[in-house]
Amino acid sequence: MGVQTKLKQPLSTMTQLARVTRLLSRLGKKPNIAPTPARVVHQENKLRVLGYDAAKPKGRRRPPPVLIVNSLINKYYILDLTPGKSFVAYLSGQGIPTYMIDWGVPDAGDARLTLARHVNRYLHRAVEAVCADASAERLILLGYCMGGTLSLMYAALHPARVRGLVLLATPVDFNNDAILNLWTRREYFDVDKLVDAFGNPPEQLLQSAFMMMKPTKNITKYADLLENADNEDFVETFLAFDYWVNDVVSLPGETFRQFVKWCYQENQLVQGKLKLEGRAVRLERVTAPLLNVVANHDDVVPRASSEALMRLAGGREKELLAVNGGHHGLSIGKSAVEVVWPGIARWVKRQG
Image (cartoon, rainbow, N blue to C red; front, side):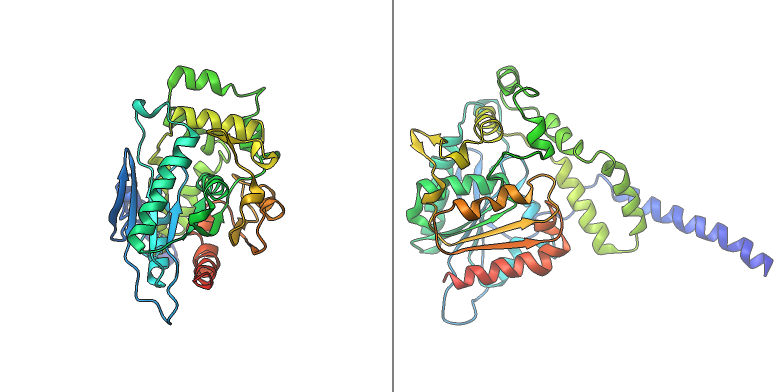
């Protein structure tokens, strides 16, 4: 009995070492990201519009096309992360014509691109290209985080092509005490000095800001990985998400300047004061059917910031979908797969 007990400890230690060795060998390697086949429907400057072939829809009604508008700050493939954790694969598998914007990686020549250029030109031409490709008069705009704010601006200024609006974790009212809102206050952050000095903000600066929101998570996440080392689904998702987090991208400096000033520091959007090329972005002019998806524990975009749109948007058909989880839980977490994705698919089909 004593010999057996003594043998168990070395075997357990060896098993742990083997497990750690296997995990370390996979860290840093490029995982199987963006696995869903796509075709390029439209391209301009760094931007690409990717199209995903839809399965044959059930029933006679044809769902309207969906154009996913990602944030300018992160890479697009968070919504096509791995096999089984791909929102675009899920939507297209439901028979919904699905398209997604890849904003690309800006260079120094893009530093002067404005917020208006992104909304009134790049996004507008992407919408036109999708409508032409899908043979549709109108589409559903689906915006994620900052991409949702851009979609909201577009819907207010160019309502003719917008059949419906789906927003995920979208900041609307910036008057709150979330960490990003505190850090970007005028007394702490001089965005003019940053943009004047660097043009496009350094990628490492943007990444470190998000990492410092939960600094201990940068350590504890590896303990979580080790604890779930035998769960291949967990490991695959972890490695892909970690790769995405470190696959940093900047955004055009002038757009960054305007977004920080007009939204974070002056909260112009909810006041009806934000103007793009002389035209006021008024939220009461957003009259298309709205599905507003929020996370109850979002530390990047507080629920209250997104939920403010429910009273400000001008349409009659407004639906709020609140789920447990955090910011990225809406895109790849358990709540996403079980609640958010099916909820969005059902809502889109009702607009057909």
